[in-house]
Image (cartoon, rainbow, N blue to C red; front, side, top):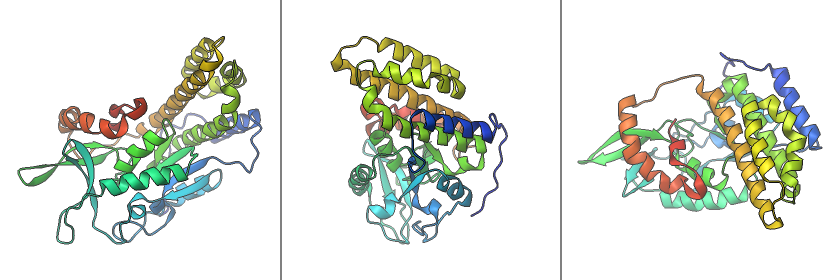
Amino acid sequence: MQQARHDRSPGRTPEQWAALVTELRDLFWIAPAQRPRVAVSSCLLGEAVRWDGGHKRNDVLIAELASWAELVATCPEVGMGMSVPRPPLIVRASGGNLALVEREGATASGRDWTAALDVFARDRLRAIAPLDGFVWKSRSPSCGAAGVTVHEVANGATRAVATGAGIFVCRARVAFRGVAEIEESGFARESTAAAFRIAAEWSLAWRSAAGSARSIGGVARVHRKLRDWWIAVATPLARRLDRVAGESRGVKPSGAGAWAAAYEQVARGGLRALVGVAARSRGGSSSVSRETRHRVAVRIVHRLAARHCTKRGLRSTSLIR
């Protein structure tokens, strides 16, 4: 499906974004053949894997990503053994957890697919590593990055009570902590797509430099090389990284790796925020009221999603946007 590209708050010009990418790749001697690895929901690439047998091909997204990224197609629902077509799935609060279940109806029994998804996610995410970015299908119960309806069964009735992230997205966030992500709608805006590319290109560059960064004084050396680039991308982030790099000087050999990990997570978090700010600036509304979302988020999503998404320090509050 062809989509028009628009941008209400363009910020940098496309030429300026491109110059930042070129500068970064030159700093780390990244060959043209080396591309960031980006996992993409298969339906967005035109694969007929949706529950109704269709797809959600996005030509703008494909054209953009094909120019700079190595694409890794992924469909968790087919991957975990569901057929095409199949009963639609929903996210349901169940027994103290968030479950991925069939929507009950004439052709579905309400089967719980969560365990099958866990097995697929563990094996698939390990197999496709390393990754530098994710492109998700919006509102998908497995692949939606935000705005996915969470249901609750009460007195025999199923009702929507909150919104959050899809179940496979939660697993991916734990496995690839801090890696940038975007939904397909983000590619309708040049600034959002460009910010996502910057984050993915930095991830590729970091993978090439991570070994030297883990040596004594390595974080400070890498940061000195990157500092002007960071200032051009986001000055507040550059200042936070200044502090991390400065505090890493003189550490013992056993602590060098920990400082490299700290630097990486601050950088990834800042770049994810850069993408998120660009994406959220578009606005939009939820399928559930603001009052209901606020009330139930604390009671259900913060409590239940934490079991899936807070491992290794990931906060469940990041699920609600």
